[in-house]
Image (tube, rainbow, N blue to C red):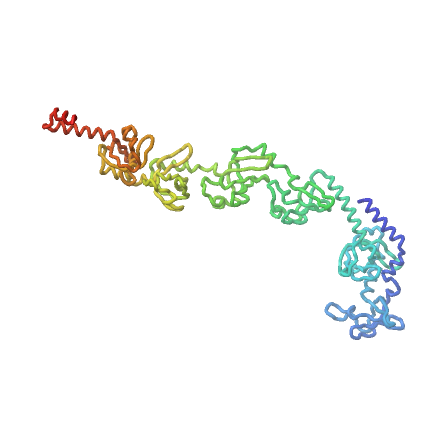
Length: 557
């Protein structure tokens, strides 16, 4: 790059030495046409002003040159006025008052110009164009000439009114003209930028920069005259952040260079790389199980991010906010900016992941429930879910399970058919599993069982008839009435009788056991046989007409 800059400087010097300076001035129309003169206004007619400049013919000046912005005349007939000859038409000189004023300024500038000021850069505006280049003026309306060879851009017809920076490359005191170059300023800027880039990219430590511009994807920071980009992922150890929440334009920030793309001339900077890594501190000073204070920094539908105060964020999953499994929105339990105590449940320094729990620091609903309720208590709940095996009931603090067999005394009833989500139900606690923190519920125990109803008219020892509903290896189930089943164990029936039984057969047996609470009845065929035998013997003993001989005779018959 330095060699290229040297070549540019050499070419510029060669141009100035080889190109005749007089030719440049000719290109600038620096000739007799621009002779300065002082004349007297002799007539103002329509849009022309006639001026006596001491020659045989009068010169013509456009009236617009002696009017202010409101169209009022600044001169009148008889006034003296400075003009410059800018051309000829039909034997008359074409004049310009503004050109004369600018010419005066040029003369004043040249008079006070010092060679050591040659590095000064001027902001100029294009006001004219001729065959050799452009006429440009600075903020003080001083006129310069920019030759085509010093443009530094492709020539086009839309150049009038354009502004850019130029540098003086030649002053002619005799001809009172100033030649400038835009190309030279560009070459100098490239050289300066190259040197700055070389110096900055060799810097390995922390440097201070100034925030120049903030965007949605990061911010541009000036480091020694060169702008570099701090991507939004390189601002904080928290991860990608909105830069406008942390900085404003003009702020001083520590940065570190992370890369430079020579082809794209793109400088990448990092603020977080210039700061101590808080994960090192976390790794050494925090353990799983520790309780820490945090600030809720952001809430999402799936959880919340919490700020530890040292440029690290932890994640609080929605399931770790409350013991309530049906939590729908974290905002119902926490708010942004709120300070809360949480328990650390995971630290992964390599993946820079920290998870915390709020619910672990809250009293477990199961423990609270046991303080208020006990086995056999009756309470009201709300159906939250129905399944193939039962229904879950919200009891206020926790959920209990109502199995299908505990929902009704009917064998065919299912919770999913009986209830819908939101139904209010009265239930009884029938089991508390403290180890697994589960509650079993019953609705059928709140009403009279079919066996209790059946027991009002039947008792142990009664002989009853029923229909065989099922046959198992251990015995036979008999349906005595609707929703009332009885069991005959296989030891309560003879093998020969059992082998000949089939479903829907009617069978007679004696009641040997009734459990009203558990809705159970046991029958026995063998007991029935014994009872009948006893009845026969009782009849024999009670009948005096019957003798032993009669009995033997009957047996032999």
